[in-house]
View 1 (cartoon, rainbow, N blue to C red):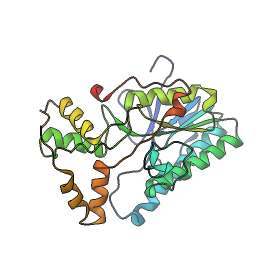
View 2: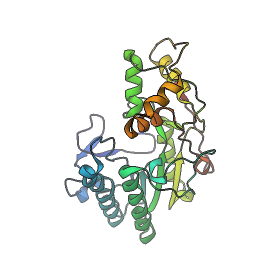
View 3: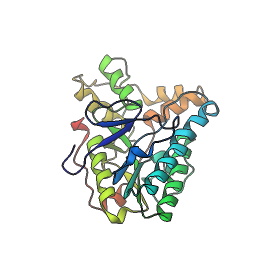
View 4: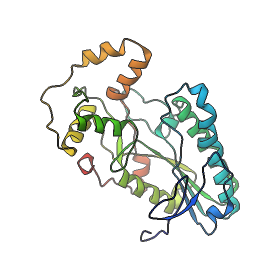
Length: 278
């Protein structure tokens, strides 16, 4: 329980610290009791990071990222929930744009099955909000760092800690990130501010980080000496030329993924954490 919120968790597993309603989204019908007496829903669930052929798991992405999300929102509207905040992804807005940071106004093609299903869910949730009295806000986080994070950043941290991750070169690329604590504050802000109703917000810490700076920050966090040398970029370029799969992996490491959170900042949001706070 926080100062302003009593928390009830809807999850596949029992949470040790909070009241929990066990339900596997996408597998079971969501019980109406799950949101009885609830005034705000923060939807954090999603299906991602599946490395299998997208055509073989598309039904899972759709079942969890779209169908279960819409089912929960419709149930929330029927039960009189006042506010629904959906955690989407910057992938829903499309690929990054050369030369500047991407905004909510850019209408690119969503990236992959994950991005496209998140985008589909966004559109359906906004429509549910328009047809009901429920406040619906959507937040697209950039890469999240901090305690408990998973995914590629967690793998990078583990690799650096174990000593097998290569020292990245300084290429001057720009990658947007946000600390998990700041993301929580952003979610609370859009839930409470009426100006956020029916809107989509990108969430970043406002600082474009290069991959090298991220590498150095993680080294410091895990008490590893930052190497004075790095793997030359031309070697990464050589690896990228081998196949589309390797090119994708190199782009994930050294490419640009820059996003603007100016719209969120217009509500008064200011990031309080930096990479040093990991």
